[in-house]
Length: 84
Image 1 (cartoon, rainbow, N blue to C red):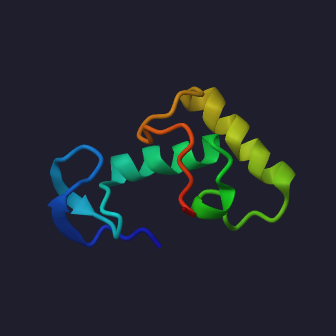
Image 2 (image 1 turned 90 degrees about the vertical axis):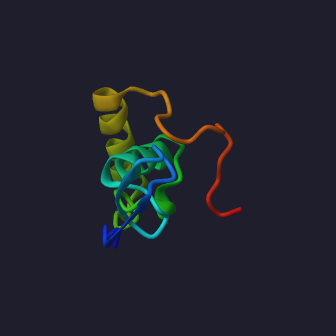
């Protein structure tokens, strides 16, 4: 879904890169996806939206936190909710 089709300024790092529809470059999109999962916004993350069980989603969350830490990488507001 996140195809990086055109060059523009990334809204995460402000570099001119190939970006997706948000527009984020690959690096910032990965950070954003991990942040969504860290916050439990599973239905908005491409990493977990396809998973049906809460347990499977929590396992992805635990894996991300163990590999990348619990601190948010891109999302500034701890209360960010993409549905608002």
